[in-house]
Image (cartoon, rainbow, N blue to C red):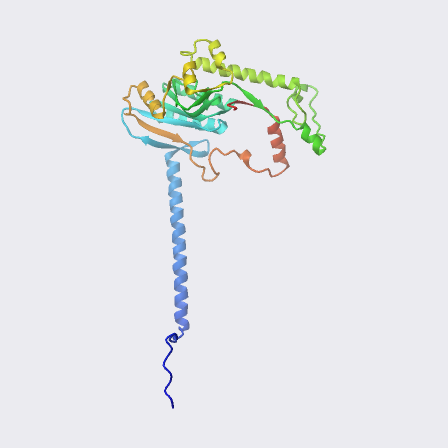
Length: 350
């Protein structure tokens, strides 16, 4: 007999098949290690989430059931405490509620000596702007100086809320002014004609004026415009009066305010020349101005910023529910009513 051939260098040696018992042990061990790891990871994530939520709720100030406010230290110091209240973006009901809650934080805390109102806004609703102006007045009535610091834009409603502060500083590139009021409404008579719709609006015989400027399915008449014009003129007069009351030291007559209350926007240098701002400077200059008003040395005060954080359960704080998609006839009717209502705004338009 011939001897068996030598094994090929490419041939792998045979391995004994694992027993059923050892296979079970291997599979079960991997499974349990993976399961334990997954559970541990979930518990860790949940713990971090809960800790963050508890810290947020404990360190914040409730804002009418919305996401809590946060007080964020900007710098340490001694001798005086200054709070920065930012007004950024559109001025609406949510912004007015935020500023009111932030002001209550300042007043309830009892440890703040001054406020810097940091404005970077092109304005917004007439009522919301007036509410913020009223809130600023409450701070000053409590003996807390308020210094306004303008960022890139502080126009129309952004200027309205600042006119009653103790001092206004604008950055060199600030756009401001735009003292005026606008109203916008949609009319859909042409659209209704195109799609063959003939809507009917009926009002009570005792209130015929309800049909004036209140029906989006017809074009506006001169009578409609006259009705809204009265409202606009009253709001404009209020704006002029707010500027005059707040800036009387620089604008000594109501006529001097009316001369620049044409809706025109100004750069920082022009605003300074017209008396709308007191000086040109940045946020740190505004903080120094606030320090000077409370007798603190420049750079010595502790500074906090009050902010509204992201709403963990409702998306970004400040997102309106009206931005949600339409879901049915009720939503469509609500949208039609919204479009039919003229909204008066202290808002810059380019």
